[in-house]
Amino acid sequence: MDRSDLQVVVGIDNGGTTNNATVLDTSGRFLVDTLIESPSRVLDGPDVAVEALAEAFEAILALTGIPRTSVLAIGLDTPGPASADGVISSKGATNFSEPAWRGFDIRSALEARLGLRVIYNNDANAAALYAHHAHFGPLAGQKSSVSVIVGTGLGGGVIEAGRIIRGAAGMAGELGHVQIPLQGLLEEVQQPPVCNCGLIGDAESVASLTGIELNLLPYWLTRFPDHELATLGAGKAAKLVRGYAENGDPLALKIFEQQATALGRLFTIAANFTDPNAYFIGGGVVQAAPHFREWFLATVRKHTSLRDEQAQVATFALVPDLDMAGARGSAIAAYEALASRPED
Image (cartoon, rainbow, N blue to C red; front, side, top):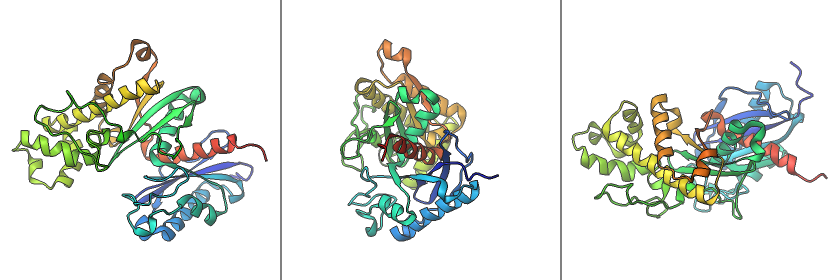
């Protein structure tokens, strides 16, 4: 099939182990409907990782039959922390642990390697943008939303009128580090949770895999001392908690009830600050068994305090196509950046 007349943007989602790529044409149609992954090689340092991104770019063009001359721009997302322009934090990051990554400008490096414009977002913002557009469709530009992505940490994204709110330093939407009320969320003798960032009682300290490992699971094992997870190391046990919750395990359900309550309180803050049309949840819970993820979403909704007027218009939903959401959101962001660029 000859696709030489198409104009497209490419979206690339960079992760700790894999890159995922997609292609979006100017009619708004994704030309890839499955997950297309390749090794990201970030542990081998910036030079190797940028080459792996270039290889992902070339591979997705070969798969879709799109000539390089048809590509208008590339959307790139990575985990943070990073600046709005794609400069990795000077302190490094979980996925960019090698010293050479500190302060590395991954956006400019890929742009120089490919000779094409690269538009950068962090991975949570990209997923949030895709969730917004997938949910609202043609009305996306008239709507607002707040998304949280529950993973090792807690990422977030704020969308207003269909566009990502980035902030002056590119750090808007860092919802994981918003402190939430703990009264009534914790058990009477449960210690206040501490985040890796040093804050006490922020959303990430509860609603994340790290929060389970460091804060929630150690407490709940004191309440269920004979639980079989007590025989495992904290890291391994934390990764198994979701499976136990899907099977109705009381300890695991207590942990996820606290996580859902924390997210509800975070959304309550968002309701009073941005008053969005929709609240989205992504992360591992989306990939859980349907009965569990619906229970989790309902519990979040239960603990989100909205005014009557807000409750009548707001929706709660899960981020769709989670594995592809980052790449697709990156592609949408690239297309929007082109559309908003002043004419030369």
